[in-house]
Picture 1 (cartoon, rainbow, N blue to C red):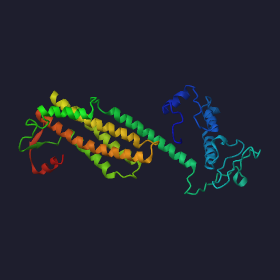
Picture 2: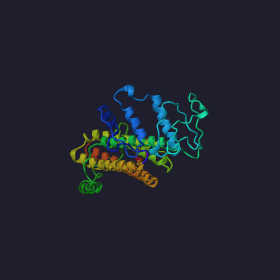
Picture 3: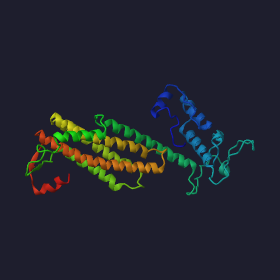
Length: 344
């Protein structure tokens, strides 16, 4: 399969370490021998034995032109050292000569002059060359690895949450609310007062998470580019990370029982984040079908909506806990702020 790592069992950064330790990696499956031989030259311990950038560029372009002309991998040849390299026209019968038919190994030179610059390759835009596809696949592979690394980092950044399933969390919240509801008589705003949100960082972070989800929802289309989709999801996770940081500060001001209740709702947010990361992997998996990628994207959007809904409940639980712990900042109700407070 094109566009995949050549050494599946070796992480990318370990390849350099192995080479620096004078370890030579085996030839990857389906790798043309001529290409692997060139790699061995590049790995030479003595710098003078390694090909320079000009020779490397000449070698790779020569191989790509052969591939464009559908030469089998097993029959790919390196350019001759005696003659200059020029690109073959894409509509030629390929200046590749089968040794079983012709004994001459001389490479054809356009216009008979090896010192002239290589002519510009005129290619029918409707027929994309194999080498072009290879380059695109390589770029996609690099982007996919970067996205995978980002997903792993985002999961590691999440606060260590209790290992409680979502269903158990709901059950526990219901059992707690049976004896002490999250919004009982001790967790209701006094008449004529409202929460003072002027310095409420938790409220602001919840608002930012909901805003990030809204941005993804508005921009989401089946044809949106992968970088745009990833950027919007990254924004959600960044805002959620900021919310967790503010939550940890807020928990220190609450009574132990109220801390437990807030953490349980926080567990739901962590569960949403892990579900989103799981679907993101499928959405970015190049081995999956287009339908699977598209379905995974929609699952990410669906989970993001659930995350926004749970953030609203999280803010309600924090407000209720603050009231019961006597640390809530209140102010008298004013018409100028009522509409805004009701939106949350």
